[in-house]
Each structure stands twice: as C-alpha cells, then as structure tokens.
Length: 113
Length: 115
Image 1 (cartoon, each protein chain N blue to C red):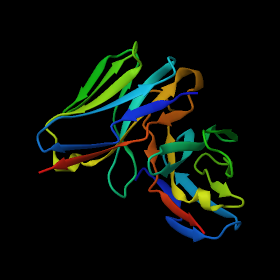
Image 2: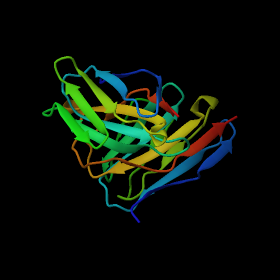
Image 3: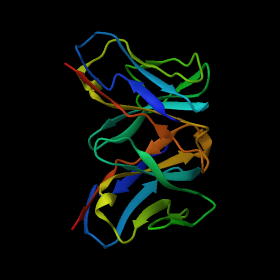
C-alpha cells in the first residue's frame, strides 16, 4: 500500500519568512495530493491540493510543487504570519485504490514574532 | 449549514464496555471515513464507505466495526474497547476522494479515553 513520509516534524520560522514542508510517497500510481491544516484543538481542513498532471499550484501565499519522478511533493508558505501556526498534513491517494487516503505524520509549524 | 457532526465529543469508558460514536453529514456525500489521530502518527484511516451498504477496511481496522445503512450516517462501533484505542477520532465525508474539489470535510472529533 501507499506510504507517505513527511519532514520535518517541527518547524519554527520568524514571521515574514518562508516555510517549506516536504513529503515523499511510495506508490507511483498515486495521482492526487491534498494538504490539510489543523489548528490547535480543531479539525483538519483542506488548504490546497494538486493532481499528478500538474507540477505546481499556487493560492495566494501557499503553493504546492510535485515531482513525480522523485515521488515527492512540497508545501511552500511565503510571508508567514502567526495565524499560519498549526499542524500541516500531506496526503496521497493511489489511483489503484482510489478510496484510501494516506496521510503523512504531520509538521508542527510555529511562526514566531 | 453544511456540516459533519459527531457524538459524543468526549468519552471516558472502561475496558470491554461496548460503545458507539455516531457520525452524520448533511451534504449528500457518497464517501465517508473514520480516522484516528495519535501523536507522532498522524491520521490513520480505520474504515471507509464508498456508498450505502459498501464499507471497507482502512489501515487500522482491528477492534472496530462500522455500518452504512443510510447515506448520511456512518457510526463507529467498538465492541470491546481496550486502552490502546484511546485516541482522537475524526469522521469525514466527501463527494468522492481522488479529485480536486472533492474536499474531505471533517467532523469536530471525538476524544476517547479507555481505562
């Protein structure tokens, strides 16, 4: 089955700096990669996603890049703000088992003033 | 308001006492799923359902049961809870899964403690 690894597990950046979270996946048939943000004590919420036929996608201060050859994808947050502090999860869905979503172990991002 | 609801939100129980966590969605979603969240392990899928009467195991199904008799409801059943099932549980639903726009909507979570 699919295996998703996520790094780093914790990340501290100063306000205004950029943050990058990286994930690798094992199943070359995976074709959809969402990112979820979970604020303290709250439920995960989708912030951005990308399909395997696209290399990059941007939405304001966040972007996701995908390298299918290397089987890794990354979340980039620019001009970080205190409200970006949260746990971020990457995930992958294999085309072979399109009903299972496999999550990474999460990255706790702390944006300091 | 479109939402996924779970009940109870908090539950403390003892080993072996059967319990059910309810999950309901009002968005007419086909797909529903249960996850457990543990520190350092992320979100792990327990069971999922593609549609009414169709359920299948996720990555950590041992000790859990589910049913999907109606489209809107997807209860999680622990027949004989054990302390290793102490966790934060999330129910989620979506139109489908593997496509942009098919966002998974999560419920508020149920924090379960088994002593």
